[in-house]
Length: 273
Image 1 (spheres, rainbow, N blue to C red):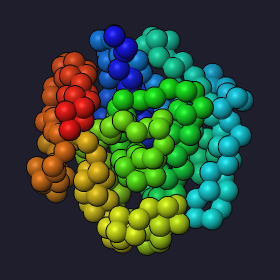
Image 2 (tube, rainbow, N blue to C red):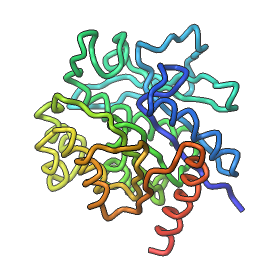
Image 3 (cartoon, rainbow, N blue to C red):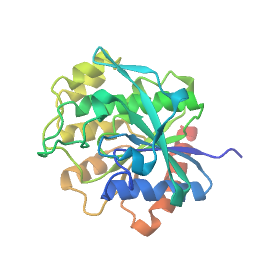
């Protein structure tokens, strides 16, 4: 029987970035799921805060070189890779000088969220999908960690839905208490329309606040789970109201096993449908 393939994408992963709820979970879960008999791939942005020399990142020339157009501007896609030896896990990094060269992650040195985080999210999602295609690896489930990754559900449902490579791919979105206080660019919905999204989808994102973006991302996900204790009430309400398959918070020691079983449930549900 062919192994199920799980693609993990996260806006941060330890040890490449400091420990946080997201970075620790994104580091901990994939090896457990792999040990339970599934194939995995792991992707994250190559933020400038990541020390390439210390973590021995190197470019994968055969995967790099594609241009991705965001808001009518071409941006070269660079793919790098590094290993987490203790976990027997490779991590692929999506890189581009326009979006990821700056020396911080999602906020500047003064704590202000970058005005182009919407475009960085779009570039990251598309970069992951184009790279996975080049690898010839068809994911059964894409598991998303952090608000920068949730847009993947929209791309799978509305842009890559006619691509045979992703026709059966499902998306699971994990909810954390990470948010952004400054709304995304007010032109975000226009950029989505330019990228090929139906107007009825992009119009749902005219309000680019964190709460509304999370609501829309959850609407298009096949499964959602609560990834932290004491999820903020507004995000818990989004979880409760979602029609997707749900996995409530699971204590850390059982998360890997429970998520692996949840992925199976999401895949089986789609087969039955």
